[in-house]
Length: 476
Ligand code: G6P
Image (cartoon, rainbow, N blue to C red; front, side, top):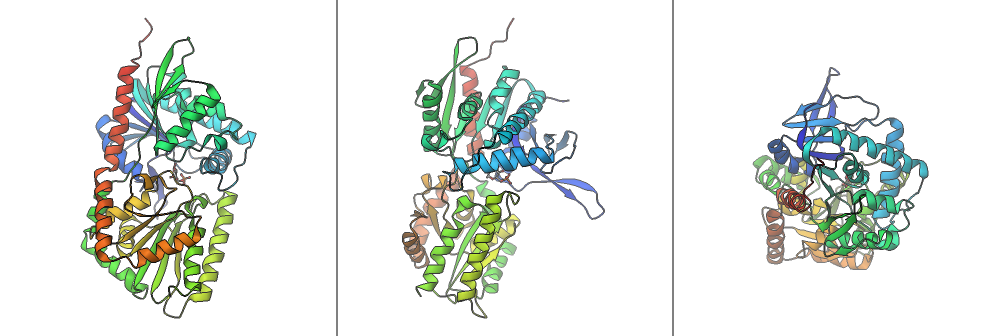
């Protein structure tokens, strides 16, 4: 097997498996931002990507795809249930998002998580050339950095945490809290979305492991009694902003935006929510505020429509099934009470759409509602801003989303404060064009400057520095 100088390790491969009409199999690049971001870097470095092909029990040999060597990791149906749906998405996900949903601590899930993390670490160790850089992604793989370091002390190892890292009072619930910290500290650089996440991590390390932390540096003991330095720091992720600008400037996409407005009955204002159907996103809070505004008679369905795209996600996890039922009950009630023959209160779409359609929707929407109760970053907020090449539209943004740190010109809200959210929505609906322009220009400047290419460069540069600092000396 060829070995790469740069290896990305993520739960999912950057491709989706598609079955053609005649039953033939092929692969298509996944739409995700991370994938787009890393594509040029991977191509330049002759990189490899280690990940799960997205379906249980399929065996796929490593293969080359658009300049990247893909190394599939097989997960059995049982691995998917215990490691992915269980430990990753019913323990870590709710715990790290401030226990919005109650995390479940199950020892069989943990055992599977350790076993599957080892499988990813072994695949990465095999794919990495001597002295290579390995970049591990996200909470599904928190033990991989340490496992890799033990197997391959010659590697430079980075880890990026895409979701929040919770306050110590919550983190300390985790029965395996020490193992996870030790797993992460196998990395030379541990990246977080917000400064607060890096701070929470450093505090957990101090409290649980008693290691010294100074600014972003953590002193980690080696097995031989010497020490090394790990860096834990914020690197806020972004989007490929230019690709949104290009789509927004296309005539067919502009025409589609107009068509969307018309098909909704040309309401005076369109509000938009775009989320994975997840309890962290505050979809119920948003609908409650919107429903009350209709109820109070402060808006009417002829005037204002809410379009809610909720893309299907983790559909076999109980909390997600329950949330879907709750949301669909709410939509039914609100629409039942307020719809007219010609106008709807909420146009609810439990579907995923290609990027062109999303950009058309962003352009059609006067107000974008990002009301997350907790969110690592929230890239939808940045996508909306990038798509508004006309410098119009209003972003209402939860202070509990990582994006709030970088986007102070949005209308900031606390989604738990329903009255506050109602006032913010009305303010957004009525905002004069000049103020929209002022705010949107400031938002766009931030998003266009800090795009995802800059993010990956900043992280990889920090990793290269770390390598110079702790140069591995091969035993003679
Ligand atoms: C979040 C996580 C990602 C994850 C994505 C989709 O953004 O940070 O790691 O891939 O959600 O979730 P899924 O479970 O479908 O991979």
